[in-house]
Length: 285
Image (tube, rainbow, N blue to C red; front, side, top):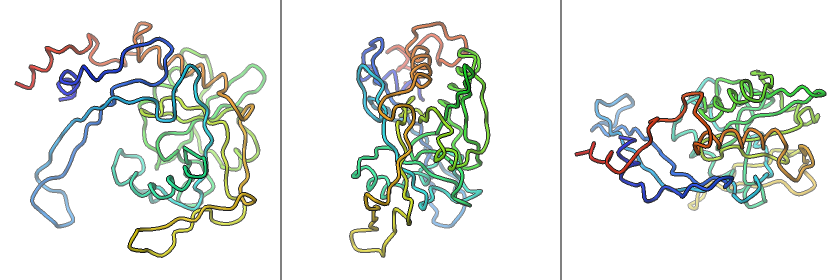
């Protein structure tokens, strides 16, 4: 089904351009429960569909890799502890629309969630996984937050392979305390995901006084969210606090070179290996 969907929409595949940022045909397989039942349980009928759409980078594009400012939603939980945070489920995304919209209005295009049980450990961004870089002399370690609420991202898995096998870096999969960010333990911080690609995060801001997003009483217009005042917000800078770090650039360059076919696929990531052509649409006949 994926092969056919792409073949039928080849005209929407963005043109290849070396060193360009983010142009792609986004593929979304979706499984819907469509059986005739209202009870709480698994139906006996499902509909599988695949939709595709041309996209640019989620957080901007250009000759340089855009670095973004982030905000920590430390009082708003994306998922429940021991819940469905590790799965690609629509219900994990809809709840964050209000808080992320409020953050975006304040100039924060990306938002980070802490663990729902204690609000002391880094989970992931609303749109993607989080990765950090530690440096000690010439030794570089890619730190990967570990939690049962984090989505098992194929982009993150690919980046970990690149870090270990191509860059020669160490990889540390563990719980990451939010205090480590506050104490400037990381040289770089970044997002990794299908839509985000590799997005360097130049700063993370958080509320140092009180809950930054207060869920007020419901109104006919829906829930409202209150953002903290300027003097309540503290900012954590990574690197120079302005541009992408060298490790994020290296990971971005390596990942996109495989995605664009600029070098042989030594990892076996590309599918189908021979590519997709218009004739593949006949598979639907």
